Image (cartoon, rainbow, N blue to C red; front, side, top):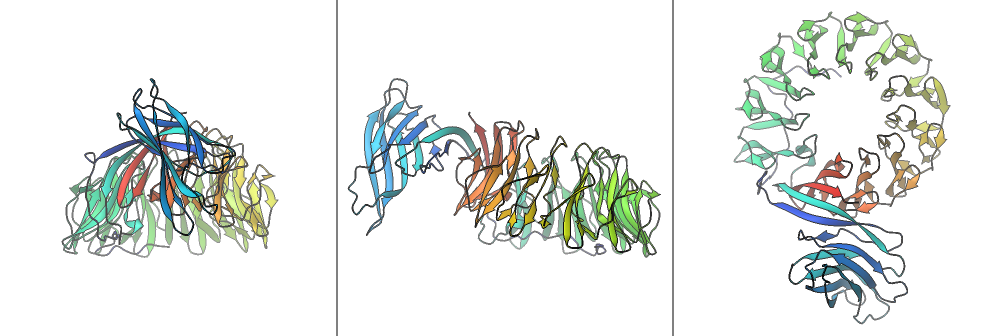
Length: 591
């Protein structure tokens, strides 16, 4: 769809409602804690442990087999040598009355600071009632070190405990009672947060808790790809519109939009207008004026800029200030990965065609602009074209087999650029086409067709009846009630495939056919750089936490966007909410 001409103001305003900043930035309080996650071979479950920053931690806790009431053997260390400790079981008795009850025990750490022993629920239990919501804790009298471990009682099995060191940095505190999630912007590296604030009938931008200058209106907040820079549009008196980049105001215009950083984060471009004149601003320099301009794009190497412009009733593509040929229409300029080629869709009369570096390809009755892609090595270009009542894929000018329909959102090159896959239809018969070979099922899920990093494997999601399943290199996986759209991911070494699967109203992660635990909701899984670990965000009731190789971490009210970023093979971070507080959470896996 063609964008509208620039008017007096075309920025997209951020929803700004009742945002209260309490603390900010690097000076905010830092909280360090060690978290214990668990593997649960039986019904014994440990959840959301929290240990003090003094160094004590839980080694193991095992329910005693055959015990009629909750009884645990435990080992902890990191206490002061020979210090006096108190051990507690706290839970709720459910019966005629809900009663919070505590069982206490006393002991000493040994000369190495190790505490081990057994604690058994000692209170009278009537009518067969057993305590629930049990928390096990140990507190040292000298070190004041406390370890607390929520557990579920079971008469068999044990809880294996693995250490996850967690640090939390308070980024900002906000009032979310009326703030929309869409008004919050997170940096690409998942370490920074920006949003808008209303102050005395004015608006301002808050970045990492630091309040910016007040304007009549702000919008189009954007971080640079390297997350170090920040920009937005601002308005004064409902007339002057300008970009604010790293806190510096740009030239005032009557309209502006399409703010974008270059991939290397060093350059900035956007559309602007002065009354009826429209142009693109790149690094503060105004380009030639036109009757209309579309959003500018940077090349992958950040050296080139292209956009579509209108002169009268015709359109052209402008690349680095050089105008291309005028056409009846032109859309979607696309740079090749090596930045040496630019391609776009154009029309002239009843013909539609692709233009690559100024050279027109074969004309068709229809060309689908959104399907235009380059191969990763930049040597091949593919798109979907229409002739008569048939549709087909064109690769470097060579036309593929004719179909009645092709899924326009799923034209995929392999990473080595040698293979191509897509979904197609003949009548009501759907096919997956890989390297020209067809495989038929009842249907396919969009956005599920992927190649492995080594290009040797291809996976997708077909359906049969009311079930869906994953196929990898022709081998069908277990059928489920649903597969998470876009959730398929290969490990970096291409040896593992993970995805989300639905069972009834719950979801689990499947890794190479092995099922994880069921949860109410799960975010997309992420593999570590060495392919050995898998991490994902989950929801269970009101709790939100991150799972590492099946181990559950600390609970939060919300994990921002459900996104997690690895920093190394044993460390990762994410942004989370506790109440109305934003935290940068960084975790290290010590095993």
